[in-house]
Image 1 (cartoon, rainbow, N blue to C red):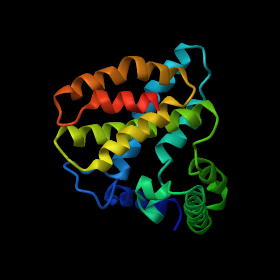
Image 2: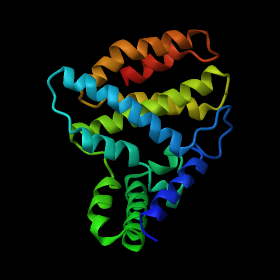
Image 3: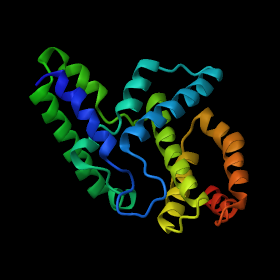
Image 4: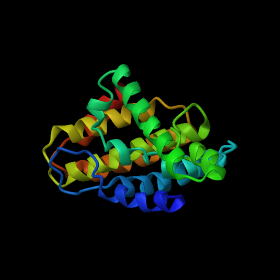
Length: 209
């Protein structure tokens, strides 16, 4: 009981593998994903601040480090399934949030429950921090897909993952998105120029869609 239960449950995030059911040359756990999202978000937030944008760093760290905690209860559901329909996505989110709320009520001491509800909530929203989280989350999809395709994995789902993540990012209004598209993405395309897939073509199609 108590916060010990929360700390101990974090081990489960190391055992939940992302993109289940697909052949992968490199496995990525939800725990590793969350750590990388925090790293991306830090730099993205620095870019925002360099343009005079105010960033709530405490909120940013809370929502990026904990954004997938609910997957302890429902696992990592493949993106095409999760986003098959708005109704299904809303239902899955409702289940996940309900189980997180039940966990907090059941295990977290009352004096800390409000804090945990804030930290473990769905962090993607219209705030600067919420949009940075969205970009950072999709960036990790891009890099996971990029790594698999670079290594010769022929699963078409990784091409779809790369393309859809890029489409999502380019539609988010942030200075760091402009920086990513102008300075980081060209390096990805250049590095992928000798891979089995045509990254330049896939990227251009995504950016023009």
